[in-house]
Length: 334
Ligand SMILES: *[C@@H]1O[C@H](CO)[C@@H](O)[C@H](O)[C@H]1NC(C)=O
Image 1 (tube, rainbow, N blue to C red):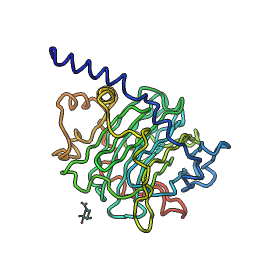
Image 2: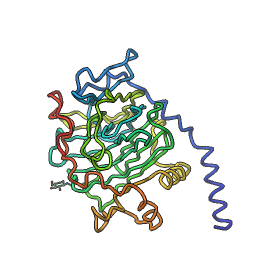
Image 3: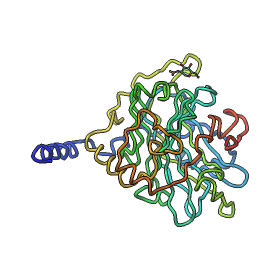
Image 4: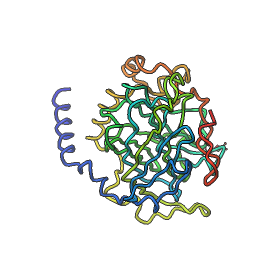
């Protein structure tokens, strides 16, 4: 490394201390549930707290539940504080995601945070994924452990989506950066999407590929959502034109990964990533073109999660409901 490396480290440290505090994103307006969202399915399993800003979504033997943003957005920053159900949660999936699957059935886009429940004593895992223009035959899943117990307290999960990149954050630490590359073509999400939060029974694939199913002895499973931030270009659903006067300009919205954050992101990925589609030889004999293969990472990941979740036969856009406003059809698409 030598002197050059030392200097780089020095400047990165300066940047680290000069960077705006991680909590700057907390300056963004938090909208009351009714202003930004509507219930999607699950009737009484969706409960709005008296403060109007916290929502409980529960799963019991009758149904899961979910909500959806009123508006469609083309790009923006979307965030929620989420506290997951505790104890035995195998087969339970909590999802915080963007999709336009109800408008574009064969060429939908999607950006996902999915929380995969686990058997007692084993931690929740998070999965991230994107689809663009109906690219459901190419899953781009990554999975991670966390450095905290997500069922013990609220933690912030955020998605930054711009024309050129998608960044997933946990407590303001970027955990994944997807740069739009030429080779991804239409697989990079590029049409307006709504934001969703759901809890549902994914017994068939969520825990070790369906080995452990939801056990309703432990129901209801309750996920709590708070501090909901919708900061993007709202799009007129008919005209498809973005009304985005101030959406991207707030200083509180990150514009990319800073050098200091990149160090944190790399540390997170080294320590907590347990699966990446780029190394899944069962699914991809040849990794998708955007993959940059790192032999050390390949070696490290070989130890984890040998089960490929879903294996490409997972879902086809309309997973949690038939259409907005109609009766829920939960997770029947597998
Ligand atoms: C999206 O997919 C359709 C086929 O389903 C294709 O005709 C179109 O060119 C694709 N768009 C982009 C931007 O790749």
